[in-house]
Amino acid sequence: MKLNIAVLPGDGIGPEIVEQALNATKAICTKYGHELHYEHALVGACAIDETGNPYPDSTHELCMRSDAVLFGAIGSPKYDNNPASTVRPEQGLLAMRKKLGLYANIRPVTTFPSLIHKSPLRADLVAGADFMCIRELTGGLYFGRPQGRSEDGNVAYDTCVYSREEIERIVRLAYTYAQKRKKKVSVVDKANILATSRLWRQVAQEIAKEYPDVETEYMFVDNAAMRIIQWPTSFDVLVTENMFGDILTDEASVITGSLGMLPSASIGIHTSVFEPIHGSYPQAAGKNIANPLATILSAALMFEYAFGLMEEGKLIRDAVAASMDAGVVTEDIAQGGKAYSTSEVGKWITEYIVKK
Ligand code: IPM
Ligand code: MN
Image 1 (cartoon, protein in one colour):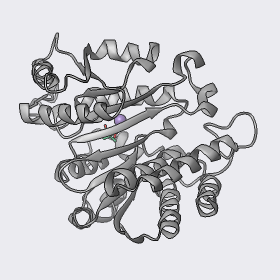
Image 2 (cartoon, rainbow, N blue to C red):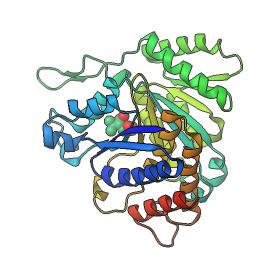
Image 3 (cartoon, protein in one colour):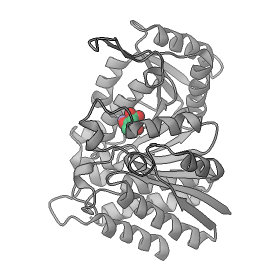
Image 4 (cartoon, protein in one colour):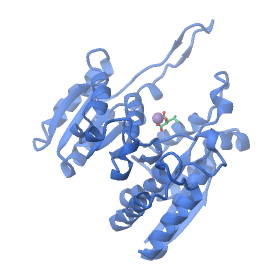
């Protein structure tokens, strides 16, 4: 198969971790006889520095003509610590999501037996947790307008907007995944307070009727936040709006032991994007210590979701599991013993793929 991939490393640790995911991707393509074409482009703070735009048109055009986008991370303290700056790296990510129509962000949460000791939760609570968060990605507070400040600067406002159509497409997606999994959907909202949440719940109730084989539960977001740490194994597919999904998936990711382990796939109208859920971790940038596994696992999702190449995706996943079993891991998940560098972990995984 021909694979055209746009590689967007972004900021901070992005370039180091994406390099390892790209190496794993190359090894898979060689092994299975796929023809890989890839091209790098700028996004985030590095794109602002170079072009003034966090998502330059040339980057968007590359994404549009590619079959998949492998993405690192964006963000820089230079902008985080300056709330007055009008152009921000995060705008690049939001522009990319909007322009590519990436309305669904899929974040699978799975536990790795060799990592359970790192979880902040008791092992008996986390063992076997395996659920999928589906976060709406192009609506809600992130994109609602008006957004801004009063003239005197002392009042600020954001707007949360959702249309029936936006809710329908993502809730339907949740049901189609649940049908292939454990047949349960948790619809998470704040319908006791928010008008948008009441529309979510109404639309979800209508759609639920079309999937009688799937169990549906409705849950307020505060309750869901609690349940994720109290009883994570009770979830199968959790679907929610943009901001709730942002918060809940960071929470969900650490129960597995490290934020550095969670991949994601953003899918929608145009090219899909595959990226780790963690940020750009600027303190570690250039130090070769960041955990590349979430990005390598994102490459696994890329093979599966963008190309339907399930065996290829599984081999990457197996390689990641094997590296953890062998203790070839970065400092964030190392247990007492030796911690390996980003590139050592990547190299071990690539060699595993080649040898298998
Ligand atoms: C994420 C990130 C982004 C978000 C930031 C970097 C804009 O936290 O992908 O979860 O809030 O969506
Ligand atoms: Mn986030």
